[in-house]
Length: 461
Image (tube, rainbow, N blue to C red; front, side, top):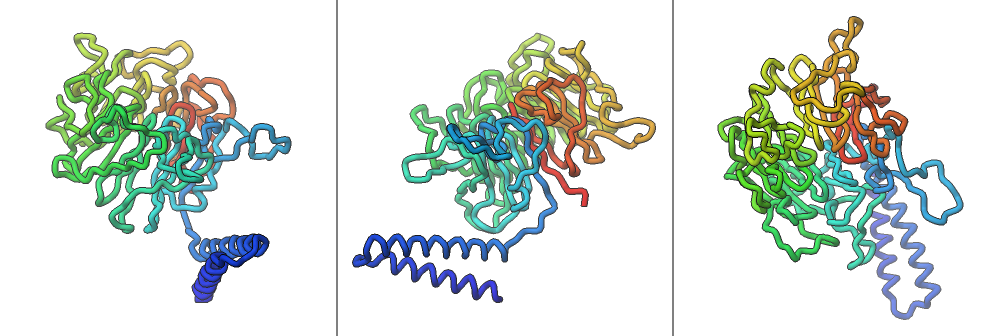
């Protein structure tokens, strides 16, 4: 009660200061004095409000990789500045605990190409924050003064979304090369950013300017069904409805939309092919290849197949509709998670065994850079041995050039191309085998992009 009375008193003081500052007979010196007094009172008010609205959270966010883009939301050196601060750096070789995760109850995270998006649990207007590259307004409109939009944010800032109700909850976020999708519990999805190929789910306007754009597009339902999951590829988007149907839109030159053609698609349409009669529970795509998983643990694929990610009998490299990979994954057991990278794919079965195929640093050693069929990564690489026989991988993720896995013990492993330290292993070397990342928390989710990585964790205590 004391805090409420103090906040009301400060609010009335601020209003009084505003009225005083409007006086036309005031001298310049008097106006400057009132302005300083006004600013100091606002600071006190915000501190008071923050003190009485402190969140108790059980989540931690760790970030690492390229920091120059602002995607990590950490300090950067300023050109020409002589004084150096201990937090000044351009790369983070190891996981850093984000202060943003300390102030808000983070519910989901997403990695774009040089930017980061995070959703928080709140009943206030700002439920999603973004930091990093903003050349196409993929993390909203931010301007210190009207008409001068910022193309780079170095710290997380709130993204304005026109929710119909403040009780709406954000259940998931996804990010592509230059667009963002926000999934809500009862208002469908909101999309923003670059729509040059229709990836935001609206009609393509070749003359549209994306820098400084305030356009936020809302899609309530697809085919009269609620949307329950989302995924962003490089320049395409995928949506799963409550009945397990998959819709897509965006860039289709490699067949990644799965619509039976190679044209760009502005309005989301149902993916055709073998998944039309299936109940899909997850789709995965980081670049131009797509994997889908049904409720029986079977895998489907479409899109770019230059390295055999979606093997076809006719050797076609751009697969424009979904195909079942039953024979391809035969004998691997029930698949529980999937991931698709720039030139490789990663899956894990219900026994915690991890399989990989495609081209790149696959985790099979320095002598294996290509696998035309799924190859198992030895379980001891993920901590399973005679002393820890119950250890098993439960989640996998892929960036454009690196891969990651989380075990049932909350341990995080990464391997692949270490572009700008995105593996978080404390060095700049590429990693041929999975290696455990030193995070002082229980990993719940990992998100990989081109040159940075995020992990949503739960503290040990």
